[in-house]
Structures are given as structure tokens and as C-alpha cells.
Image 1 (cartoon, rainbow, N blue to C red):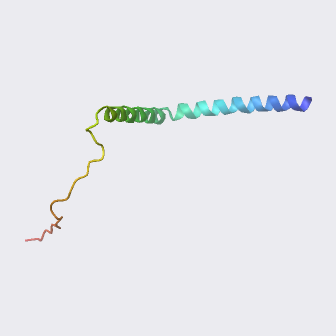
Image 2 (image 1 turned 60 degrees about the vertical axis):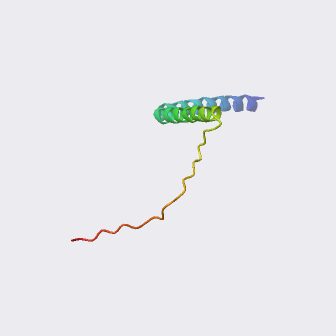
Image 3 (image 1 turned 180 degrees about the vertical axis):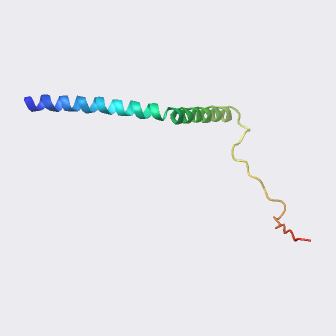
Length: 76
């Protein structure tokens, strides 16, 4: 009986310590977390925009009509 009570107290203590450590880490990295949340929201808005218009495509393929040439510069 005493062992179960000690285990529960230990688990509660570890949980509180974990929550405190998580809170400190979240506070320390709050700018980075905020940036990634905004980036995720922007992607969601963009995906919603592209889903509304069936004639818009994100994957635009460009054809190379002219063969690429190497430009060399020689000194005078």
C-alpha cells in the first residue's frame, strides 16, 4: 500500500517537473514556434486558395526552347 502511494507521488512530481520544463522551453523558443505556426497557416490559406480555382496549377512546367549557351568573357 505504501509503495503505490510513493509511486503516485513520484509520478505526480515528475509530471509537474515535465510541465515546468516544457513551459520554460516553449517560452524560450516562443518566437520560433510563432514563426512556424504562421508559416503553417499561410500554407493552409494558400492551399485553400488553389483549391477554389480549378484552372490554377502550382506545378508549372517551363519548356526550354533555346539550348543553353556558355558565355565566356576574355580580357582585352
